[in-house]
Image (tube, rainbow, N blue to C red; front, top):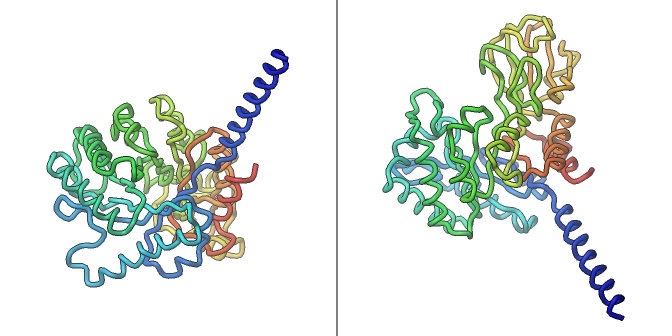
Length: 372
């Protein structure tokens, strides 16, 4: 009898362990979408596929975060977008809605404000006020960039790294464990190494979102893959490169989120060598992912190709000497598999406005995250 009881106990423990592993493995990675639109047609998107929906962007007015400037002629319009997003919880009860702060061009005074204890304290208090006012689940910081030169005319300092740590400490002190805190980081070595202190910052936040897009070398004078999954000959920057760098710094993988682009970058005056890839050219404009099917067509002279090493699509138009780099359902599925296989926290994209309402990139991402 004792032996039999012992066997039963071992079987029960093993069953519980297997159940726990199954439960853990059945938890899908996060699927996070940014939204910077005016709210028009927002309800037509498949919001139920998201785990997180992030409104963009709040900015500084003095030392406080605001969602619209004090001289905004139609403040209710922005408020209504936020309230609509929060209202999606009725059809997706597990959805988390966050407010994002900053963005490209939205942090002109961040370096100065966050260098002061009073500035950080006032900012954190204003964030809590917004959380409570709109029943929001957290804050996403998109300071572009602490400790690294950002948009022209934006002040920055090497001391931003330390001040960013102090800002997050104050935010966590004020927000407690009730609200989520995430932050976006540029997908370059400089942004990752000089932008935040891993040991100090990661225990304070829920996630770091890698902006693994706009990674083309030279940004505007040389073509390349703007959102590749893997590095390749001709381009070292990629989502995988950033993940390995964060790994080397000891950042927990379950807190790492890679990025995808729901927009394409088009270059002009590109020579035909190598079908325009890694050639001199001038960045011209972007188009949304939803416009790809009607814009980048064989009838209009485009030849679509795929870099199997980078896991990135691109296209070249010999008649117009244009080059385009983008994400498509195949590359997004590869990123989703990468997230699952490496047990990352999830995948995010910029931004929902660039997608179709049905059978779009979000749908492809959702399926790939949940279907082996």
